[in-house]
Image (cartoon, rainbow, N blue to C red; front, top):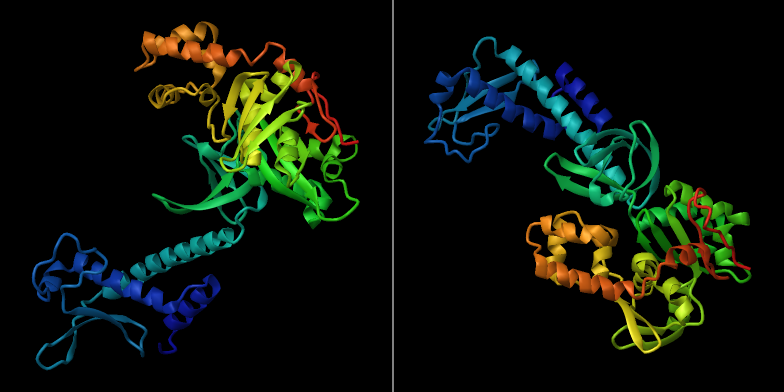
Amino acid sequence: MARTEFAAALNQICTERGIEPSAVLNSLKQALLAAFRKDYPQIYAQYEIGEETESQEELSPPQTSLSVVLDDQTGEFKIITTDPKTKKDKDITPPGFGRIAAQTAKQVILQQVREAEKSSIIDEYRSRLGELITAQVLRLDGKNVILDIGRGQGVMPPEEQIRGEFYRLNSRIAVVIADIRDTFRGESVVVSRSDPRLVTQLFAREVPEVGTGVVVIEKIARDPGVRTKVAVKSTQEGVDPVGSCVGQKGVRVQAVINELNGERVDIIQYSQDPQEFISAALSPAENLQITLNEAKKTATVSVPEDQLSLAIGRSGQNVKLAAKLTGYKIKVQAGDKSTIQVTGNEEYEIDLLDLDTKTRNKLVEAGIVLLEQIMGDNLERLKEVKGIGSKTITEIKNKLATYQQSDSPEESQSDEGSSQSDTIDTSTPQDSSSTTDSSK
């Protein structure tokens, strides 16, 4: 490209914005040809070759003998046609085309700048996946939350939000950069509040030992907004991993809980021995007898009657998170009677009832995912759900009765207030029935 004022300006813009000048020129020539076709259809029609199909794009009509060239001397764009016989070029630029060219150049360059900046932002955040940031809530777009994440905007779809959490405009929240996804608006930065990496990054921020690698979060199982189990181990002799994460009087873990809007956090000691690990994961229940089947990755846990509700947890939450944390399918039983069996892959509370797939899907479609929504008087209201009849309600009632045999009324108080020496069980400061117990 010759050293003209246009070329100098174009090079300056492209250098500042990180755009290739050749890409801008190619887009500009295609746009100018489309503008010529629109404003001078009679002249353009004289040089069309054959019939144009509907699949061809407006900005790059290929069936024409016309082309756009940049005059090296004047910096002007000209419309050129080539004689197929003599191979000579002929300038057919109409008078006043310079104004059209200038306006088109402006639009193309602005578009290229916007695309380049967006691509640069996306590339930056692609290299920061899993990073913890503090974002500001800008607006709500349907069920999506749009946040200011620095150089750009991030979107938090419903599946990445914490169930039951409300987001106020201009409020600041901790999120983790979860993914880069293709949407109808192009690539977007997806941030998350439900991703387990959020808990990991919060501990790395609040606990110096985790940030430096002295204490490692080996595994994590999370029910967003409700409860999280974290298995930690030490890479340095003499360092208590559980005590380090708890901090003096629980100050460190409480800072994490506050960022998670009161979500309970259990911290346990990681062990390579499956029996020890499963026993710790089922805390605060004690005196457990565990039988393993390594081939099938299953564990049968016998618990005393007075520890049954602690091992299972409210709505089966404790055993479900333990199964997810350890990777074992856990069956909890009191004596010879099997009470509950979970894999850790249960998505909703109603999955603990082991309903048939059709019934389960009907309930989920109706927004019924919690056990409390099908208990008491709510059970009879299931008749209003499309696809749920009297026979299905009876089956649900029987499943619920079987499950409730292991879910004692005292469970909610005993589960909240109990603790084990290697388990930290915390909840919101307003919940006076809960305590924080550090490792001794």
